[in-house]
Length: 207
Image (cartoon, rainbow, N blue to C red; front, side):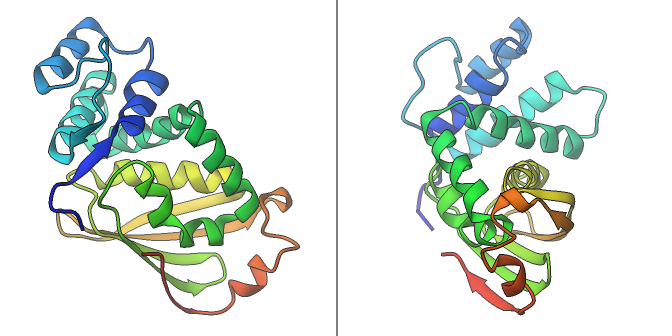
């Protein structure tokens, strides 16, 4: 993992410029500005990971004051994917997810997350048909934000009736237990060997 954890400009853009455009109040914008993010100015090429966590917490508190932080962070993770879809890179990645299907999309978790930061590492363990454990090395203080991203990404890959649980979290690394009961034919699961292969168990490294 990199010595200095950085979140790249396109990730900041996806959340604060694309997904939340028009939803940030003047008070929220001011809090972000004081924390080091001015959404009305040109974004920097990268931001410190600690600052990224602060930005997300501010927006979660401002947009969803009635919800527990874990729920609001999950909603922001889903919103991130909506904004990411509007970027050039996001359009390409999400189109690829539809072709790959959910199993192979999970296998490429490191590559997908590394398009927006310099630190993500992941390991995938296949427990059975449509059931996986995904370990990620650094999700910061908001593990449910990453869960929201995974949820939205797998929905894009064709998953239905999806369930994600946090089964281990130490303040940095987190393990997500992911399972679903069905996937659409158009997701790339049916007809490409993906579902059949999912009956095998073992560990898959996506480093």
